[in-house]
Length: 286
Ligand code: NAI
Image (cartoon, rainbow, N blue to C red):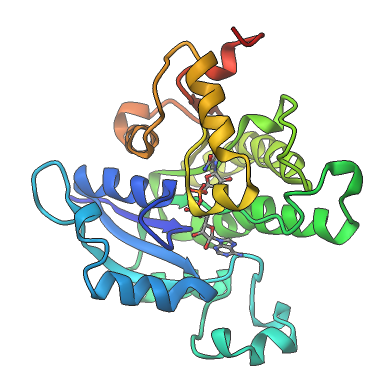
Protein backbone atom coordinates (compact mmCIF):
# COMPACT_ATOMS: atom_id res chain seq x y z
CA UNK A 1 0.00 0.00 0.00
CA UNK A 2 1.17 3.51 -0.80
CA UNK A 3 2.47 5.74 1.95
CA UNK A 4 1.14 9.15 2.87
CA UNK A 5 3.42 12.10 3.72
CA UNK A 6 2.77 15.43 5.40
CA UNK A 7 5.42 18.01 4.53
CA UNK A 8 5.40 21.22 6.56
CA UNK A 9 7.14 24.21 4.97
CA UNK A 10 6.31 24.26 1.26
CA UNK A 11 5.36 27.64 -0.21
CA UNK A 12 7.09 27.61 -3.62
CA UNK A 13 9.08 25.28 -5.88
CA UNK A 14 12.57 26.49 -4.86
CA UNK A 15 13.08 25.04 -1.39
CA UNK A 16 13.96 21.71 0.15
CA UNK A 17 10.34 20.99 1.09
CA UNK A 18 9.25 20.98 -2.56
CA UNK A 19 12.17 18.73 -3.58
CA UNK A 20 11.36 16.31 -0.75
CA UNK A 21 7.70 16.25 -1.80
CA UNK A 22 8.77 15.39 -5.35
CA UNK A 23 11.14 12.61 -4.30
CA UNK A 24 8.46 11.09 -2.06
CA UNK A 25 5.84 11.41 -4.83
CA UNK A 26 8.24 9.75 -7.30
CA UNK A 27 8.55 6.87 -4.83
CA UNK A 28 4.76 6.51 -4.80
CA UNK A 29 3.72 8.46 -1.71
CA UNK A 30 0.59 10.58 -1.47
CA UNK A 31 1.56 14.18 -0.73
CA UNK A 32 -0.04 16.57 1.77
CA UNK A 33 1.64 19.88 2.51
CA UNK A 34 1.47 22.51 5.24
CA UNK A 35 1.97 26.05 3.95
CA UNK A 36 2.68 29.11 6.09
CA UNK A 37 -0.56 31.11 6.31
CA UNK A 38 0.83 34.40 4.91
CA UNK A 39 2.19 32.53 1.86
CA UNK A 40 -0.91 30.37 1.29
CA UNK A 41 -2.81 32.46 -1.27
CA UNK A 42 0.14 32.97 -3.59
CA UNK A 43 1.17 29.32 -3.35
CA UNK A 44 -2.30 27.96 -4.05
CA UNK A 45 -3.03 30.37 -6.90
CA UNK A 46 0.37 29.69 -8.47
CA UNK A 47 -0.29 25.95 -8.24
CA UNK A 48 -3.74 26.39 -9.80
CA UNK A 49 -2.48 28.62 -12.58
CA UNK A 50 0.17 26.08 -13.55
CA UNK A 51 3.13 28.23 -12.53
CA UNK A 52 4.85 25.22 -10.96
CA UNK A 53 3.96 22.70 -13.70
CA UNK A 54 7.50 22.50 -15.05
CA UNK A 55 8.84 21.73 -11.58
CA UNK A 56 6.07 19.22 -10.96
CA UNK A 57 7.43 16.82 -13.58
CA UNK A 58 8.50 13.50 -12.02
CA UNK A 59 11.12 11.14 -13.49
CA UNK A 60 8.38 9.05 -15.18
CA UNK A 61 7.00 12.16 -16.93
CA UNK A 62 3.86 12.47 -14.81
CA UNK A 63 3.12 15.55 -12.67
CA UNK A 64 3.37 15.49 -8.89
CA UNK A 65 -0.09 15.75 -7.35
CA UNK A 66 -0.50 17.52 -4.02
CA UNK A 67 -3.63 15.96 -2.57
CA UNK A 68 -4.25 18.76 -0.11
CA UNK A 69 -2.65 22.01 1.03
CA UNK A 70 -3.21 22.87 4.71
CA UNK A 71 -2.66 26.39 6.03
CA UNK A 72 -0.19 26.18 8.93
CA UNK A 73 1.57 28.47 11.33
CA UNK A 74 3.94 26.30 13.33
CA UNK A 75 4.60 28.90 16.03
CA UNK A 76 1.09 28.38 17.42
CA UNK A 77 0.12 25.07 19.02
CA UNK A 78 -3.61 25.77 19.42
CA UNK A 79 -6.15 28.60 19.25
CA UNK A 80 -5.52 29.70 22.85
CA UNK A 81 -1.95 30.60 21.80
CA UNK A 82 -3.01 32.98 19.05
CA UNK A 83 -2.86 36.67 19.99
CA UNK A 84 -5.65 39.03 18.99
CA UNK A 85 -3.62 40.95 16.39
CA UNK A 86 -2.90 37.73 14.48
CA UNK A 87 -6.50 36.50 14.77
CA UNK A 88 -7.76 39.71 13.19
CA UNK A 89 -4.89 40.11 10.69
CA UNK A 90 -6.52 39.84 7.29
CA UNK A 91 -4.02 37.29 5.92
CA UNK A 92 -4.84 34.99 8.84
CA UNK A 93 -8.56 35.71 9.18
CA UNK A 94 -9.10 34.37 5.64
CA UNK A 95 -8.04 30.86 6.73
CA UNK A 96 -8.92 28.71 9.70
CA UNK A 97 -7.59 25.70 11.62
CA UNK A 98 -3.94 26.55 10.97
CA UNK A 99 -2.48 25.94 14.45
CA UNK A 100 -0.41 22.78 14.76
CA UNK A 101 -3.00 20.91 16.82
CA UNK A 102 -5.82 21.84 14.45
CA UNK A 103 -3.83 20.84 11.35
CA UNK A 104 -3.08 17.44 12.90
CA UNK A 105 -6.78 17.04 13.71
CA UNK A 106 -7.76 18.01 10.16
CA UNK A 107 -5.31 15.51 8.64
CA UNK A 108 -6.67 12.84 10.96
CA UNK A 109 -10.26 13.63 9.96
CA UNK A 110 -9.40 13.74 6.25
CA UNK A 111 -7.05 10.76 5.96
CA UNK A 112 -6.87 8.89 9.29
CA UNK A 113 -3.12 8.43 9.35
CA UNK A 114 0.21 9.26 7.73
CA UNK A 115 3.52 7.42 7.37
CA UNK A 116 5.99 10.25 6.86
CA UNK A 117 6.29 13.64 8.61
CA UNK A 118 8.68 16.26 7.24
CA UNK A 119 9.60 19.56 8.91
CA UNK A 120 11.18 21.86 6.33
CA UNK A 121 10.71 25.25 7.90
CA UNK A 122 12.67 27.83 9.82
CA UNK A 123 12.38 31.48 10.67
CA UNK A 124 14.63 33.85 12.58
CA UNK A 125 13.54 37.49 12.48
CA UNK A 126 17.04 38.67 13.44
CA UNK A 127 19.01 36.21 11.29
CA UNK A 128 21.09 39.00 9.77
CA UNK A 129 22.25 40.19 13.22
CA UNK A 130 25.30 38.68 14.94
CA UNK A 131 24.48 36.60 18.01
CA UNK A 132 26.03 39.25 20.25
CA UNK A 133 23.51 41.77 18.93
CA UNK A 134 20.48 39.48 19.00
CA UNK A 135 17.60 40.47 21.27
CA UNK A 136 15.95 38.05 23.67
CA UNK A 137 12.76 38.23 21.62
CA UNK A 138 14.61 37.58 18.38
CA UNK A 139 16.42 34.59 19.85
CA UNK A 140 13.27 33.08 21.34
CA UNK A 141 11.38 33.66 18.08
CA UNK A 142 14.10 31.79 16.15
CA UNK A 143 13.84 28.84 18.54
CA UNK A 144 10.05 28.91 18.53
CA UNK A 145 9.75 28.87 14.73
CA UNK A 146 12.74 26.66 13.94
CA UNK A 147 13.10 24.22 16.86
CA UNK A 148 10.02 24.00 19.06
CA UNK A 149 7.89 23.95 15.91
CA UNK A 150 9.33 20.49 15.25
CA UNK A 151 8.62 19.21 18.75
CA UNK A 152 5.08 20.52 18.44
CA UNK A 153 4.52 18.98 14.99
CA UNK A 154 5.82 15.59 16.09
CA UNK A 155 3.86 15.72 19.35
CA UNK A 156 0.58 16.38 17.57
CA UNK A 157 1.17 14.12 14.56
CA UNK A 158 2.87 11.12 16.18
CA UNK A 159 -0.45 9.59 17.34
CA UNK A 160 -1.49 9.35 13.67
CA UNK A 161 1.88 8.21 12.26
CA UNK A 162 1.67 4.51 11.50
CA UNK A 163 4.18 2.32 13.39
CA UNK A 164 7.33 1.97 11.29
CA UNK A 165 6.85 5.54 10.09
CA UNK A 166 9.50 8.16 9.69
CA UNK A 167 9.90 11.78 10.65
CA UNK A 168 12.61 14.19 9.56
CA UNK A 169 13.74 17.78 9.64
CA UNK A 170 16.35 19.94 7.93
CA UNK A 171 19.35 21.35 9.75
CA UNK A 172 22.52 23.26 8.95
CA UNK A 173 26.20 22.91 9.89
CA UNK A 174 26.10 26.30 11.67
CA UNK A 175 24.81 24.30 14.68
CA UNK A 176 28.28 22.87 15.31
CA UNK A 177 30.79 25.09 13.46
CA UNK A 178 31.06 28.86 13.26
CA UNK A 179 29.27 30.21 10.18
CA UNK A 180 29.48 34.00 10.42
CA UNK A 181 26.29 35.53 9.01
CA UNK A 182 23.91 32.81 10.25
CA UNK A 183 22.83 34.90 13.18
CA UNK A 184 19.83 35.87 15.26
CA UNK A 185 20.02 32.63 17.24
CA UNK A 186 19.54 30.49 14.12
CA UNK A 187 22.77 28.61 14.88
CA UNK A 188 21.39 27.94 18.37
CA UNK A 189 18.05 26.86 16.91
CA UNK A 190 19.74 24.26 14.69
CA UNK A 191 21.80 22.98 17.63
CA UNK A 192 18.57 22.51 19.58
CA UNK A 193 16.92 20.80 16.62
CA UNK A 194 19.79 18.30 16.33
CA UNK A 195 19.84 17.54 20.04
CA UNK A 196 16.06 17.17 20.04
CA UNK A 197 16.37 14.74 17.11
CA UNK A 198 18.17 12.31 19.42
CA UNK A 199 15.80 12.63 22.36
CA UNK A 200 12.70 12.52 20.15
CA UNK A 201 14.09 9.44 18.36
CA UNK A 202 14.17 7.70 21.74
CA UNK A 203 10.73 8.81 22.83
CA UNK A 204 8.93 8.33 19.49
CA UNK A 205 10.83 5.10 18.85
CA UNK A 206 9.96 3.49 22.16
CA UNK A 207 6.38 4.69 22.27
CA UNK A 208 5.31 4.67 18.61
CA UNK A 209 8.00 2.82 16.63
CA UNK A 210 8.57 6.01 14.64
CA UNK A 211 12.08 6.96 13.44
CA UNK A 212 13.38 10.53 13.80
CA UNK A 213 16.31 11.91 11.81
CA UNK A 214 17.57 15.23 10.51
CA UNK A 215 19.33 16.07 7.24
CA UNK A 216 22.18 18.56 7.52
CA UNK A 217 21.90 20.12 4.09
CA UNK A 218 24.40 22.18 2.16
CA UNK A 219 23.55 25.62 0.78
CA UNK A 220 20.57 26.04 -1.57
CA UNK A 221 19.29 29.28 -3.13
CA UNK A 222 15.80 29.02 -1.55
CA UNK A 223 13.57 31.91 -0.66
CA UNK A 224 14.52 31.60 3.03
CA UNK A 225 18.24 31.41 2.23
CA UNK A 226 18.13 34.47 -0.01
CA UNK A 227 16.67 36.42 2.90
CA UNK A 228 19.79 35.65 4.98
CA UNK A 229 21.89 37.42 2.36
CA UNK A 230 25.04 35.28 2.04
CA UNK A 231 23.78 32.30 0.08
CA UNK A 232 25.76 32.92 -3.13
CA UNK A 233 28.95 33.16 -1.11
CA UNK A 234 28.16 29.89 0.71
CA UNK A 235 27.49 28.11 -2.57
CA UNK A 236 30.76 29.39 -4.06
CA UNK A 237 32.62 28.43 -0.87
CA UNK A 238 31.25 24.91 -1.02
CA UNK A 239 32.13 24.45 -4.69
CA UNK A 240 35.65 25.69 -3.97
CA UNK A 241 36.25 23.68 -0.79
CA UNK A 242 34.04 20.59 -0.54
CA UNK A 243 35.28 17.10 -1.49
CA UNK A 244 32.67 17.07 -4.29
CA UNK A 245 33.09 20.27 -6.30
CA UNK A 246 29.60 20.72 -7.71
CA UNK A 247 26.54 22.75 -6.84
CA UNK A 248 24.18 20.86 -4.53
CA UNK A 249 20.77 20.24 -6.02
CA UNK A 250 17.64 20.19 -3.89
CA UNK A 251 16.81 16.81 -5.43
CA UNK A 252 19.85 15.28 -3.74
CA UNK A 253 18.33 16.22 -0.40
CA UNK A 254 14.91 15.01 -1.62
CA UNK A 255 16.37 11.62 -2.54
CA UNK A 256 17.98 11.26 0.89
CA UNK A 257 14.64 12.09 2.50
CA UNK A 258 12.98 9.38 0.39
CA UNK A 259 15.65 6.89 1.46
CA UNK A 260 15.26 7.82 5.14
CA UNK A 261 11.48 7.44 4.88
CA UNK A 262 11.78 4.02 3.23
CA UNK A 263 12.28 0.54 4.71
CA UNK A 264 15.87 0.72 3.39
CA UNK A 265 16.55 2.96 6.42
CA UNK A 266 14.62 0.84 8.93
CA UNK A 267 17.45 0.86 11.50
CA UNK A 268 18.40 4.53 11.11
CA UNK A 269 17.10 6.84 13.81
CA UNK A 270 18.43 9.66 16.00
CA UNK A 271 20.98 10.68 13.37
CA UNK A 272 22.19 13.79 11.60
CA UNK A 273 22.79 12.84 7.94
CA UNK A 274 24.99 15.23 5.95
CA UNK A 275 23.88 15.94 2.39
CA UNK A 276 26.40 18.66 1.60
CA UNK A 277 28.90 17.31 -0.95
CA UNK A 278 31.05 16.40 2.07
CA UNK A 279 31.83 19.97 3.14
CA UNK A 280 31.24 19.14 6.83
CA UNK A 281 34.26 16.84 6.81
CA UNK A 282 36.75 19.56 5.80
CA UNK A 283 38.89 21.17 8.49
CA UNK A 284 40.38 23.92 6.34
CA UNK A 285 39.50 25.60 3.08
CA UNK A 286 41.78 24.62 0.17
P1 NAI B 1 12.08 27.69 2.06
O1 NAI B 1 11.84 29.15 2.02
O2 NAI B 1 11.72 26.89 0.85
O3 NAI B 1 11.35 27.00 3.29
C1 NAI B 1 11.10 27.60 4.52
C2 NAI B 1 9.60 27.55 4.70
O4 NAI B 1 9.26 27.83 6.05
C3 NAI B 1 8.85 28.57 3.85
O5 NAI B 1 7.93 27.88 3.03
C4 NAI B 1 8.13 29.43 4.87
O6 NAI B 1 6.89 29.86 4.41
C5 NAI B 1 8.00 28.45 6.02
N1 NAI B 1 7.74 29.03 7.35
C6 NAI B 1 8.39 30.04 7.98
N2 NAI B 1 7.84 30.27 9.18
C7 NAI B 1 6.81 29.39 9.33
C8 NAI B 1 5.85 29.14 10.33
N3 NAI B 1 5.83 29.84 11.46
N4 NAI B 1 4.94 28.15 10.13
C9 NAI B 1 4.94 27.43 9.00
N5 NAI B 1 5.82 27.63 8.00
C10 NAI B 1 6.75 28.59 8.16
O7 NAI B 1 13.64 27.53 2.42
P2 NAI B 1 14.58 26.27 2.66
O8 NAI B 1 15.95 26.84 2.65
O9 NAI B 1 14.26 25.17 1.74
O10 NAI B 1 14.26 25.84 4.15
C11 NAI B 1 13.77 24.57 4.54
C12 NAI B 1 14.62 24.03 5.68
O11 NAI B 1 15.94 23.74 5.18
C13 NAI B 1 14.80 24.99 6.85
O12 NAI B 1 14.75 24.26 8.06
C14 NAI B 1 16.21 25.52 6.61
O13 NAI B 1 16.80 25.99 7.79
C15 NAI B 1 16.87 24.26 6.10
N6 NAI B 1 18.18 24.44 5.45
C16 NAI B 1 18.32 25.28 4.37
C17 NAI B 1 19.56 25.46 3.78
C18 NAI B 1 19.71 26.36 2.60
O14 NAI B 1 20.86 26.69 2.21
N7 NAI B 1 18.64 26.77 1.93
C19 NAI B 1 20.77 24.76 4.28
C20 NAI B 1 20.50 23.86 5.39
C21 NAI B 1 19.25 23.74 5.96
